[in-house]
Image (cartoon, one colour):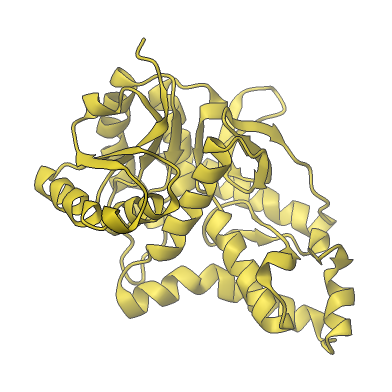
Length: 316
């Protein structure tokens, strides 16, 4: 088996998300080697050249276009390959097209690399994370998706804007599907340890139900709004991928709501969805239970059922 290089990453898929992710990783200085792989080799070569020309302003790094064999020693393999979401299209509408693409991409990755971490970014991310886990044969802790990391960032950003505070002081999660059935876990939300409703009242806001509904809807509809205006989203997700890679490379043991395989009560692999987990150099290293009220638990079950129905229809 090829020895893994902890300073090397691979990106499979050089569309808007893949190329923005490559740029974000170059800026981060996390890796010293980055290989770009795409069905269109010219596209990968062009992106590698374009980003490489900025290296005199950054840290030393080797960025190049390659083949699947070139990812054999990559510690993190980021999969963005897939059809993009079109205006008016839900993430779940993409499922059949992208499951088909993954049926050829994932076995090629697994042929050359069985020891790295497989980070799924393409949509619908939960379904494709489940698909990647089944097709790759990787241990469940080393296959996970970007999940609701971006949705959670959007929630923190909007709450920070609403309350006039630094969004980094806001502690809240979006959980469940990265999509229309996602849940804002309001009952565990706080600002620097102060329960959210209490902090809102400190800032002069008392219409809690109305504000929570508006902000949750704005988070859920963010991608649709951006796609309607510029036809794609890529900067926010690229920064989310960079954040996940930081947790892996630095073994931070950070708590992030990535999409990972959930075990059913019988112990069988059931579905992939987002819940807070500890992320470090081994991938998903532990689950973090969060406080949910009965309504949130019910909504989470519905979200899981939505994903399970798609898996049973398309994959199983």
